[in-house]
Length: 211
Image 1: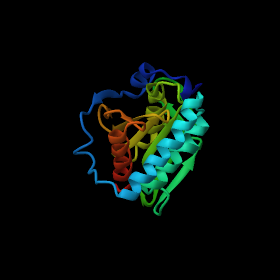
Image 2: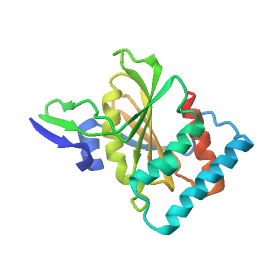
Image 3: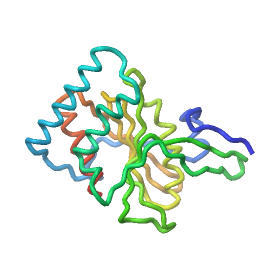
Image 4: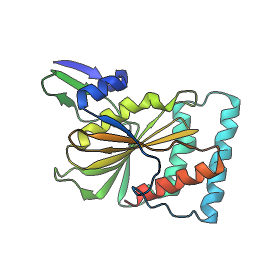
């Protein structure tokens, strides 16, 4: 059996092996109910944006810095650090075996939010949000194949899962749905450096957190 690393997959590989079909969504509604931000949330969001801008203007921001400076504060502000959600970091995913292909896939996700209060039929934790981060100079679409690979296994146990790919500045949410075939919906791209779209970014994270 051939063992492959998910990081080396192209989007064509993922679509062929897993049968995913790509779709586009014009809006986050009706999938999510976006609530207005409080004044305090807007102030904290401005601080996150300013902190990141200082590093961004100095040059390339590494993947680790993106996680620490932007992703972690945004998740805290959105409520992901509160029970019943638990954050997992850089964990090994379960091995994925592709029938009739004699292929085994291994890889590590960056950040995973799961519900400790909700389990799937397979008695595994319910995946809420899977995040793949890149450095500030990498196009976010380069992380799509990894994100879909990591989400594939959990779709055996739940109907859908949200994914997010970010380089700190740009944010692409993906809604991945189980089916025959399975579909993934690319949502409108958001940007931390623009006030209105950064506000919507936090609104989307809060809405996903409350699912």
